[in-house]
Image (cartoon, rainbow, N blue to C red; front, side, top):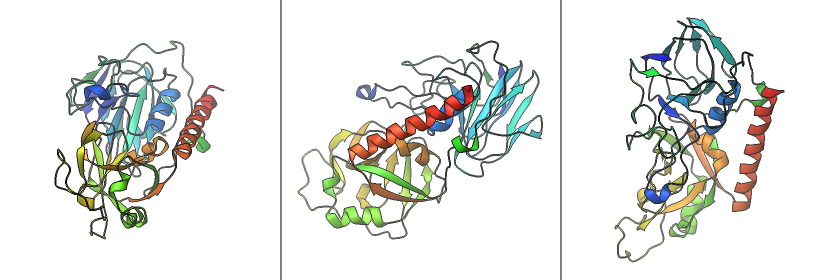
Length: 327
């Protein structure tokens, strides 16, 4: 067992998510930086999809009641084991009574804590991921509180004792300023040609209004992007970005009133009445999940074929990193 002495900020149990329930209005949740989450589990020899902890800005303070193997990945952050600095992107053996604590993230936004065996919480629709807005998954559907007791599943390999360390060439780089590739969406036509050009040419910044539901962006140029003039459709709102309700995939880009884009994240609503001008590609969602407040963002349109190719490249990159740990 692990006792939560201090919860950190927005620390929740997350795994690979619960896909397949959009028709019920349930988003997939899961790790915001899926690559870091996958590699954390690989470092402690967990089976894919094992539940880990995700924290934002500041990590928790945890005390272990039994020996365990733990790894920390994600943004750069000071990590202390019994008050002594330890490295991220490698596994560590801890003993009963040991305490793991953290400083503040210095780069990125989120960190991941994997423990051999994975966290033992009740599955909801095939996943242990927490969806705070709905109040299910994880620990009673909420973020961690001081005094919580976290239970672990038996390790995949009970005899696993070795220390694993990820090579520098496999550690993902998360920059403050990012370029996001997106596929133009079903309602991209709602922007004029000038509006679409402005959307890509402007330098956007991550606002403090960014969380697991969505990341709102702003720009020094506060003039609205230009929408095509239209007669308000029956069933749609009066805002030029309103449409009759449509589905929202992860990474969908809304631009209410044409001023501040919102990129929908893993806990977002699954449908609504704002047009989505495009969708950030899967390969870049991890980058977005680590984009810090005031970090600069640029958008670049790509084809569906380019998006699929980038997804395959990401999958292969992660596979190579995992294979390097077992060689």
